[in-house]
Image 1: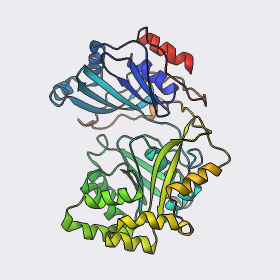
Image 2: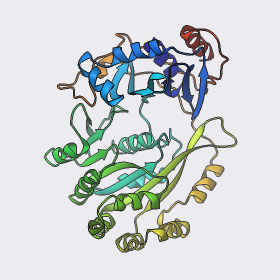
Image 3: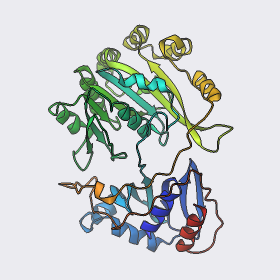
Image 4: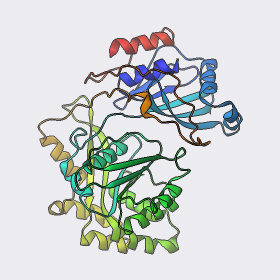
Length: 392
């Protein structure tokens, strides 16, 4: 059952699949959540959980009432959270993207290319959950695929894009499978000769400190955070440290920061799909002084008047989108072949690798259209799958 649902949701371009006892299955397509089909039973979701969680880990799930894993199902890389809710055992499945994103394909401004033209420093990409941060980071990595060749080391949770490059030497590590934590991965990176380090997400102060250290020691570091704007991201980073350490962190951040991209996905009035809307900070002497002095409330004002320095406010970027003549419609990517997922050497509790639940990869859809899945109720799970297939 789970294989067919994921295959159909992926072909429809869904980013998420939700299964909850007593409710119809729900998928999120282009940011919109739609339900279809008949309710799923508690027995069905519990049986799915037992298939996904190893027997040795089942007691841990019963104790904690949640369990995270990263796995390829029906040829699609998935990040799965199993949870206990009022109705029983539920599943939240994030379907990870395939393909090779670029700034052009993502409808991003070409100015972002300049952020990775430098040899060292820190570039932050921030936004809320589901705003496309991972895709933008992947597009910036693709911009590095040109002479002279650079060694790129990524630390991700989980690996979403598998990079195919001609010049850059890319080594990808998944937290929980190839390294126990972002912190350990960053410590290891100092002995692995990278030119560029990608930190999939900064959550803890220790990760932030090691990221700043790496940016100060001659590496170009790309990292993401959850924040709604440029100033909010910088404030959150600094305030993650104890008060007595924040002055030093401000100095370190001011000296290493190259730029910040804050983004959100918006639906343009003339489009039936969403595109990134950005706020872009390029570090200048004035910006560095503001960060060192802790006067982050002045950043937004400087960005409003700093177009000549490469600053992009929300409003200015919105005007650029309004004047853009054409947009690239997001394509539904076929899932990569199953053999591209090598078995881990030592699975960990955080992300056990149980292998694919399906030995064959589904045929990927190539339609450019956005599929609307707001079908009516009725029928079984098989009916839901059939409805999705008819709408592809």
